[in-house]
Length: 195
Length: 303
Image (cartoon, rainbow over all chains, first blue to last red; front, side):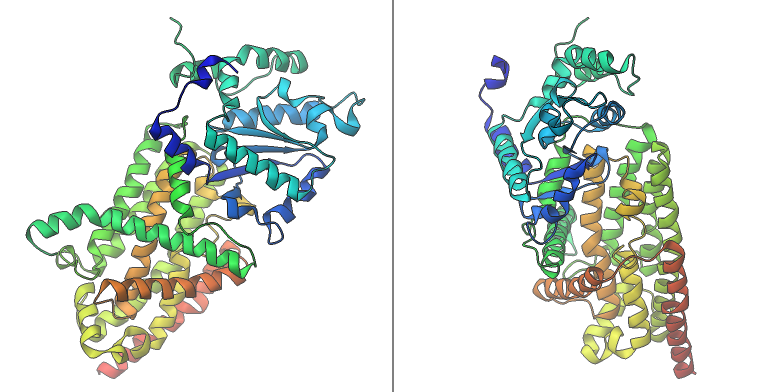
């Protein structure tokens, strides 16, 4: 984490963060078996909505991209396209050991071992697979991080886009994404404007 | 509050009051639905957190000029309609526009939404819009029919005067008791107008990915939420003024709003969703003939 991110926040930003943490919408990209733990988390047994976390159906509306399970070469490409459609601030949450190190698919030729080389991951939920309690606890720590103003991993995608792009191109060859991240970063002022 | 400084203050304050009421109603709706499903549910002002979160998003993707303008049309049209609906202590504009004007202005927000969603060029959005306009053919005709009956009975189209007549006559003259056929038909229409189940075919998240809202993110979705929260008390007030005798004080107004909304919500909580053709067929099969029968009975009584 660079020095810039550790500067003190203004009072307005502190208040805003404490309001924004109360509403998080989640897009769950259910690739693997982990998706089965989500229905109990959302419905009456564990009720995620009491923290203001709701499932949403399109990337444009979502704040959290929850990736539940292993990513093959094919699905990772879709995940990157989905991530770039989301509006910042956006948080990627890796769910289960598959996203951390491949999990039980670690020696498969077709799965990606580590998600954070391709997308900036805010939070990992370890386990194979994490129980609803673990998901709730993970989201609560995300809420705490947002409140403290530390959940800034999404800025890393704008600031260090070359790193992620290099890894993406290494895997896919030349992939076509629909927005220029470098232009966006300059337009919204996430990086210094280079002329 | 209908002349001088009070009027100006009220014109400025009314959108905020309406938004605040909408936040309370929306939060109440989510809480009540959660309790029906045996969940704890979010806080009572959850819609406010959602709107703040959406309006402070740091990137917002615009799909073009019409997409931006449509959001203004959406919120502007709703605000304009809101002023013509009389509430306790504020009926200044309702002397210039009767219920026909309100019906006309109610069409501006869906039209604005149609233009904006058209530019996003998302197929799910287009399906949502076509469904919204189809549903208009369902509930609007029923609503107009009930209103025609009511206007024929009392000989006026002014919402304020209809409200005053009911208030003078006491609860026995309230539309829903005096003309139960029209009242029941309008209750169905209200369910459709508020876009609650079983007529929730426009949003239908599992089917067409929230329809018109598919490509909306950040501030665009925030504007849609604000419009929804302002429209919520307004649409309930229209029903209340015609069929529940309006309200004489703000306490009565808020109580009636919540009671009416509870009725809509409990139906919403236990029903599934119609298919689009099913919803339209239902509207034309049950509420519309009911309303037509009510009108015929009023005509028979008048002769």
